[in-house]
Image (tube, rainbow, N blue to C red; front, side, top):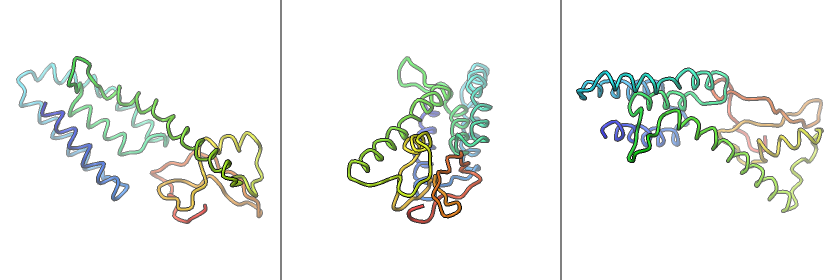
Length: 189
């Protein structure tokens, strides 16, 4: 129960920091993970708990890989690793929630922003906005753009999917790595 309380505290505080600063230092996750590891020594069943944590940490290489290739943020990866140490089999019922469960749920929930982008783009077109004005792109690229982006008047914490080459607007549908590239800062980009 202490592990669950610590995990909830970690997630609530990190959410607040994320909303305010959009960046959480790695020391934050190391600190909470260390406290979670120290909690092992309070419980008399150290060996079974070490085995449980070891099993939960199976996700660590996967989330690090996802982070390094840009499909996952560093804070997301380190949060899952810290959760694997703090509360490896968290549960309030007979069904345990493991870090792997969290990772698989994140993969499923990945579809939601795509659906939101499609709805935004369809609504914009219904309102009469020409979202592809001045674009020199194929139907396939336009379809991909409808899925992964939308026109924003004030983009923040996102990446531009359009660029101008030789005076023509084109789509830039390349994957952007949040750790290495700058977010949009200018309106209408």
